[in-house]
Image (cartoon, rainbow, N blue to C red):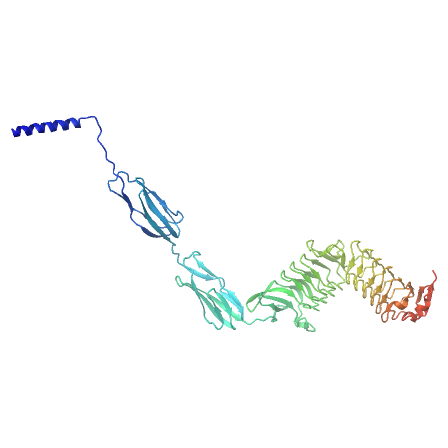
Amino acid sequence: MNNKFLKLVGVFLITTLTFVSCGDDEPVVTTVKVQSVTLSSKKIEKKEGETEKLEVTVLPKNATNKKVTWKSSNVKVATVDANGLVKALVAGEAKITVTTEDGNKTDVCVVTVNQKVKKIQNVSLNKTELTLNIGATEQLITTFLPEDATNKKVVWSSADKEIATVDENGNVTAVKNGETKIKVTTEDGGKTAECKVNVVSVSKGDKFKQGQLYYEVTSINPKEVKVTSQKGKYGYPNWEDSEKPTGDIVINENIKYQGEKYTVAEVEESAFSNCSSIKSVILPNTVKVLGKATFYDCSSLEKVTLPNSLVEIGKSVFYKCANLKTVNIPKSVEKIGNGAFRMCPKMTTFTVDNENANFSSDDKGILFNKNKTELIRFPEGSAITDYTVPNVVKSIGKGAFFGSANLKNVVVPNNVEMIGTYAFKKCKSLLTVTLSNKIKTIEYATFGECEKLKEVKMPNSLEIIGGNAFNKCGSLTAIVLPKTVKELGYMSFSYCTGLTSILSYIEKPQEVTMNNAVFNEVNKTKCVLTVPKGTKTKYEGAEQWKDFSNIEENNK
């Protein structure tokens, strides 16, 4: 009974299972969710350029979706690709984050990138030899190979600290005369470089000779010298004959002294005074000043090249340079001293750079200020005989026409208000001069030693005739003194031995200031003094006027 029942139950179960499995429905699939994600490293350190692959573990192991994404917090420091490969770029820190697609589960690895160590292969210094004056300091500069070496720390040392010391920045200080070596040593690899240091005693005023020329130290910092004469500007004579430079002189911009380079910045006054055998001179572009009488009486000097650095041409620089014919004045010149080109009888032309802001020249080779309101220098050797000063000119400079040998007749127009001292002195051929009616003063020696001067038309504005104004004008036969004259200077008409007529319109001679010897050596017996009507008695009682034997009244 029981066995029969069990058999029936078994048949029922088999039939039921068969029926279910033979149905039309698909089987049910179960999804396994991600519970966590873990990286193989939480922290890694890499040098620039290195890589490392991060491994990822997703749990549970039978999770349905194990896809992940990668991200770097600082792509400049480190990057990561889709496979977890991290690449270190530059020194710094970045966080690499992995994130699951299923559930956004994350893990982070901190990446530290260290600078790649570049070893020093060599070190060198900017100088291998250095000359310093006692007390001077100069810095030595290091250069490393490779330039981007990681550790550039160095140690400086001196072989003899009593001669020269060096600090941690490579500043070398000279202590006393002698020679030593300064060494630099790298902390990385112990690489070395050395500089030989010569310590000398150079002082301002030190004088030395190189070639034909003498130099004097004028500055230690910056290092500058000037060209000087054998005995200096206070020596007389400046040169011994055997030491005088001759021929063609070229002065270089720089010169070495005690192992150091010095700049030639100046040519001292009287430096070449009386060096009569110099033919030409080329000055360097470092010279700013030509001192007083630099080339005084260099009688053979024919050509001089002035540099674009020149600022000042001193007083009497080319005085008595008898063979100098032309001078080109560069744009840099700001000042030209009195008499700079005086007694240069062959000088025919001045040429001024168009860019010069202070001076100019015209097509006749005459030197003016920039806007031509002052006539500075008429070349002594000019062939011009008759000259009318341009109307734009307001003043004629000191010695402007001094020694102009060919000049015969000059007209000074009414715009001119002032004529400087010595303006026409020693114009040996000068015959006549017509003066501006604005001139109030004829300055000291304006027409001194004009031996052939016969006529001067004095303006009615004239108040003062200066000392020696017409001294030694032996051909002057007649003068007219306007009534405005208030003063006659010392020896103003002395040695005018040809003077036979003085026509004076001065009405109060006793009020005129008469300095000593106004008419010295004038033949006062032969010369007739004609005075305003009714004033003869006044002249006969006035000092110096009364010395004339023939005083006549003008009845016109």
